[in-house]
Structures are given as structure tokens and as C-alpha cells.
Image (cartoon, rainbow, N blue to C red; front, side, top):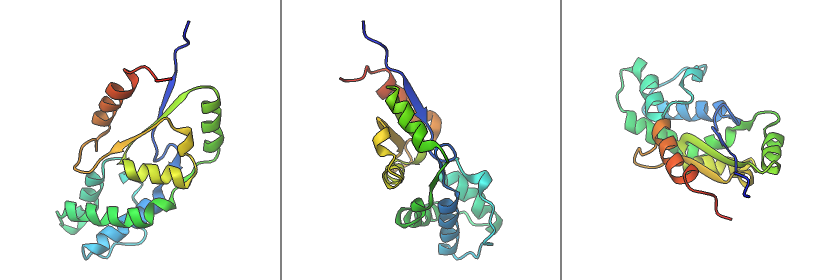
Length: 164
């Protein structure tokens, strides 16, 4: 008799890592790229988590600026160059991931962050080897929102039996 494989689905930002320093630096860089002079004490805590377009809309609103696409592009450029390296793992995450893996759990990541960025962060922190799959948004806006991402994840991963 086969024992069913159990899976764990984790988020990245605010679950495994504190990504605020890199996100803040990239938000400030995006606003500056559009000609704004943001206050360095900008509070983005309420903005972390939703899709980037939503965050940029909130950050641009006080300036009366609707160039969300340009802000997103500037953010992603800065974030891809250096912002993503500002992420810090929460205490105990490495040992928790190791324990889950040793217990035979299949570990997956689902984030509204671009999948390429999530992979680079996990590689940088040396967490990637713990994951059986990394899922995130893709260029063009597909899978930017968690419900769509989770629906695809469930359809492609959970409904399929693991290959041995």
C-alpha cells in the first residue's frame, strides 16, 4: 500500500523572508525614476503582498501620477539588479524547511512575486533545494493574483500524482 504524499504550500514575502528592505529600496527607486522625490521614511508595510501594479497605484496616488506601467518596469529593473538581495530569512526558517523535507513532505512555493525573482531569492539564501516547485507570476500579468496562481498550481501539481 502506498502512503499518500503530503504537500506544504508556502508563501515567500512575510512567511519565509522579510523582504521589506529590498522592496522599499526598489519602490523608492521606481518613484525617483518617474521624477518624484519620495520621503525616505515611506511606509510600505501595508503595500507588501498585493500584486505590484496595485502597490504602484497606491504609491503614485499622492503624486497624481497614473504611470503604473512605467513604475512597475522601473521597480522590476531595480529589484532584479539589487533589491531582491535585500531579503532576510526569518529566524528558524532554514531548520523548519529542513525538518519538513526530512519528514518526507513535498514543499512548494506560491508567490505573487515574479517566479524568476522568487527563484533567485531562494538560490541566494540557499533555500531552493528544499522546494519541489516554485510558482509565481510571469511576464504579461498572468498569475499576478493569488487565486489564479493557486488554481493553476492545484490543477498542475496537486491533481497529478508525484512521479517516482
